[in-house]
Image (tube, rainbow, N blue to C red; front, side):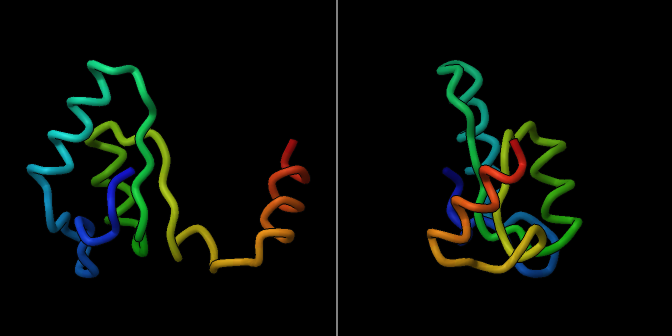
Length: 77
Protein backbone atom coordinates (compact mmCIF):
# COMPACT_ATOMS: atom_id res chain seq x y z
CA UNK A 1 0.00 0.00 0.00
CA UNK A 2 1.36 3.38 -0.98
CA UNK A 3 0.87 5.85 1.86
CA UNK A 4 -0.96 9.09 1.16
CA UNK A 5 2.14 10.93 2.37
CA UNK A 6 3.78 9.99 -0.94
CA UNK A 7 0.98 11.66 -2.91
CA UNK A 8 1.00 15.47 -2.95
CA UNK A 9 -2.05 17.70 -3.11
CA UNK A 10 -0.73 19.68 -6.10
CA UNK A 11 -1.06 16.74 -8.49
CA UNK A 12 2.57 15.66 -8.45
CA UNK A 13 3.81 12.60 -6.64
CA UNK A 14 5.71 13.62 -3.51
CA UNK A 15 7.68 10.38 -3.37
CA UNK A 16 7.93 9.60 -7.07
CA UNK A 17 11.09 7.52 -6.76
CA UNK A 18 9.74 5.66 -3.74
CA UNK A 19 6.47 5.00 -5.56
CA UNK A 20 8.38 3.69 -8.57
CA UNK A 21 10.44 1.42 -6.30
CA UNK A 22 7.31 0.06 -4.60
CA UNK A 23 5.70 -0.64 -7.96
CA UNK A 24 8.90 -2.27 -9.23
CA UNK A 25 8.95 -4.57 -6.22
CA UNK A 26 5.29 -5.37 -6.82
CA UNK A 27 6.15 -6.48 -10.33
CA UNK A 28 8.68 -8.95 -8.96
CA UNK A 29 6.35 -10.21 -6.21
CA UNK A 30 3.13 -10.30 -8.21
CA UNK A 31 1.23 -8.64 -5.36
CA UNK A 32 -1.25 -5.86 -6.17
CA UNK A 33 -0.55 -2.33 -4.94
CA UNK A 34 -3.09 0.21 -3.73
CA UNK A 35 -2.34 3.93 -3.34
CA UNK A 36 -4.20 5.97 -0.77
CA UNK A 37 -4.83 9.69 -0.67
CA UNK A 38 -5.79 10.12 -4.32
CA UNK A 39 -7.57 13.47 -4.47
CA UNK A 40 -7.17 14.65 -8.05
CA UNK A 41 -7.37 13.28 -11.57
CA UNK A 42 -3.66 14.12 -11.88
CA UNK A 43 -2.85 11.89 -8.90
CA UNK A 44 -4.84 9.04 -10.41
CA UNK A 45 -3.27 9.48 -13.83
CA UNK A 46 0.30 9.61 -12.54
CA UNK A 47 -0.20 6.49 -10.43
CA UNK A 48 -1.95 4.67 -13.27
CA UNK A 49 0.89 5.58 -15.65
CA UNK A 50 3.36 4.07 -13.18
CA UNK A 51 1.35 0.85 -13.08
CA UNK A 52 -0.45 1.17 -9.75
CA UNK A 53 -3.21 -1.44 -9.52
CA UNK A 54 -5.77 0.26 -7.24
CA UNK A 55 -6.42 3.59 -5.59
CA UNK A 56 -8.49 5.11 -2.86
CA UNK A 57 -9.15 8.66 -1.82
CA UNK A 58 -11.53 11.59 -2.00
CA UNK A 59 -11.44 11.52 -5.81
CA UNK A 60 -13.45 8.30 -5.66
CA UNK A 61 -15.58 8.97 -2.60
CA UNK A 62 -15.71 10.18 0.97
CA UNK A 63 -15.10 7.81 3.89
CA UNK A 64 -18.14 5.80 4.94
CA UNK A 65 -18.88 3.63 7.99
CA UNK A 66 -17.87 -0.02 7.67
CA UNK A 67 -21.42 -1.32 7.28
CA UNK A 68 -22.02 1.13 4.42
CA UNK A 69 -18.76 0.09 2.74
CA UNK A 70 -19.88 -3.55 2.81
CA UNK A 71 -23.24 -2.61 1.35
CA UNK A 72 -21.58 -0.65 -1.46
CA UNK A 73 -19.11 -3.46 -2.19
CA UNK A 74 -21.85 -6.09 -2.45
CA UNK A 75 -24.06 -3.82 -4.54
CA UNK A 76 -21.36 -3.69 -7.26
CA UNK A 77 -21.24 -7.45 -7.70
